[in-house]
Amino acid sequence: MASKGGGTGGRANKPGASSSRKGAQKGSGGQRRQGLEGRGPTPKAEERTGHPAARKAKSAAKRGAAANAANTRSAAGTRATSRPVRRTPGKGEAEQVAGRNSVVEALRAQVPAKALYVAQYIDSDDRVRESMKLAMEQGVPLLEAPRHELDRMTNGTLHQGMMLVMPPYEYAHPDDLLEQVFAAGDTPLFAALDGVTDPRNLGAVMRSVAAFGGQGVIVPERRAAGMTAGAWKAAAGAGARLPVARAGNLTRALEAYKKQGVMIAGLAADGTVPLHNLEIATEPLCLVVGSEGKGMSRLVSELCDVTVSIPIASTTESLNAGVAAGIALYEVSRRRAESRG
Image (tube, rainbow, N blue to C red):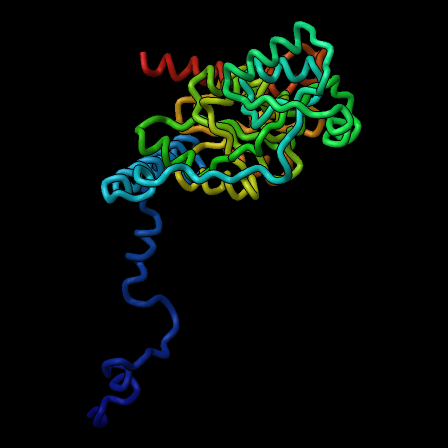
């Protein structure tokens, strides 16, 4: 007759007690069968992490969320509609344009000006007469000054008896540019300049952005071209209707754009995607243009969703920043027109 309690076997049957027996446990065969079962059908491209289709779907979702947020702010009467775009005055003193040719060209381009200084007893010619006529038509005050005073004001620059004074440019805020585009229901298209120091390139890029349906240009605060008289002249009128935003940190500004669903495409000689294969052209896009010599900075390049190359002849080392931006913006505009048609 078995002893009371059934020995160790009885203890093993108690609830919560663990077995000291080795070998396969109850139910292990089922576990092995489950391990041999298939994993099911292959996930869709949109559901696979790292796939281009998944990134595109994620971008669309972010864009939709950003648009909904902008609509909510607009309905609530927040800054999207009730407050003007933030403007940041350019640092430093007012800019001076000296010399008869420079002054008349600036006035022809309708560069904003505070005053036109003309030397006393100036020997008038066609440039002087046209400058004074344009200044009066544009409401620019005409001031007469002794020649030695102009020498002092221009720090000895060859002024030929004429000097135009421009006020500091008021830059927009990058966040406000994007917010206004979303609030208007448009697809964002911006150009950002990274390390471009020639104001004429800035003006040329502005002209191309305006011509191909873009909404603004973004420049860094340091080591970059600003809205000088040279930029105004190269922009050929685009400066009066296209905002330029200044970012204290270009990398952070682009990161903020990415969080709002904007794709970042950087132009690079060794870009991974040829311009004619730029499929994200129809998406919200910020095109980054680097300097002609060094290209984009490392941090900005690493931030790009894609780097884009423009095929050129092997005998040409690189394209001017303004020319490269114009070619890329044209291709973006062409693809967007095709998608709408």
